[in-house]
Length: 132
Ligand code: FES
Image (cartoon, rainbow, N blue to C red):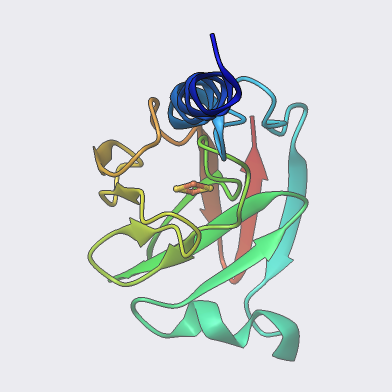
């Protein structure tokens, strides 16, 4: 193998490895556990949840307002490589490589291989308690 062949073969091998693994930390993304917090919807810091399509992130969990007094909560870290997903009303989109998830956290596209973990939300008056 001459120098040109060596460089070509090692470059192609590196490219093949990168295509399979680069920007793919799936399995290394930390999914929150033992989550237990309460949000007061009258607090200014939680005002986004008073609007349908609004969201906030706390303790690695993204809490979303679905309208009609309905809320849901999911892991905020994209399963692909851990970037915080954005809620866009009709679902989630990861700004890093474009993974998408529906309002139930189910993967609908992009490079992520799994759904977003869902947490339990209980509404009591103006408080949301998130656990899971
Ligand atoms: S981190 Fe890659 S799609 Fe979200």
